[in-house]
Length: 194
Image (cartoon, rainbow, N blue to C red; front, side):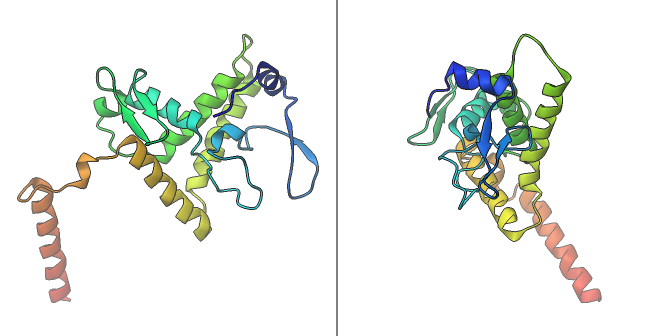
């Protein structure tokens, strides 16, 4: 992950950060409806704009700090997390999967932390809300390509944050197994009655 220079942060804070839109070639200001570079794991590719989207190392580290614990370490090379202290927010709240809302929350928090300055303004709140909504919209896309990417993205996050999910195993004879058996019987009985 590259370093963010003070001049880049200052341009972002001052609203002077621009990028060239690949579609029309004109410069546009970056606002809460655009994805900043740190949302990507690779440089932005206008030919394949989904490549690396919402997989940025800064987002992963922030997610780990908030949900696993601030002292947990993340090894990018192996995609492994090592918790260092007590249980994190995810464990305390029985969270076993990454959700679209949690990714949008972390993305907006990281975005805000890069914009934070001594003067809090209403425009910053609006922009953070836009970031949240824009990230969340990735998971609500109607196009099959977007739906497939959203599914793959959630799986990617789950593999990093919760590589072994306690809900992925069904104990033989356990409550879930009994429920599944009962539901299967009910479904078969309804089919026979019809």
